[in-house]
Length: 197
Image (cartoon, rainbow, N blue to C red):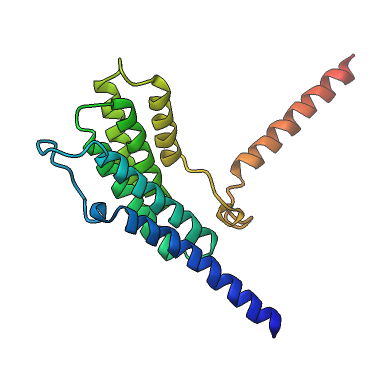
């Protein structure tokens, strides 16, 4: 009984820690919570994009925490918020610092992908790619390589867990059967050649 109480107490403390990450972030960056778009014609403080990206980073940390604690619904919600804030932070750079803007787009795409929203993640990665093509001279090619890698991962996902692998009943045995037939055929050819000597 004591072990059960201790386990429940430990789990509630872990969940409280995740909530505290988010609560502290929202207290520190309260003016930015409702910001969902940027008007580049309006005057913004120098810290506008930095504060938005800091809030996004804290949302992402909170999402990671909730994911580790086995609360996928909360994790997804905070990954989505992180993606939105990263995207708005990137948009807030308007016509400056294209490398940082592209990095923020990549972070936004990563957050949306972590939330399972691969369509939005793809759109964000494609925005980053478009930004790179428009400003190749000022953005390192390595950032575009990162984007291309992420787009490739979306097109050709790798199973994340053993449960994603097909069972033997679902597996396509045709390639294996073809390989066995080829190996047997090569073996017969080899035996025939050795007998003729």
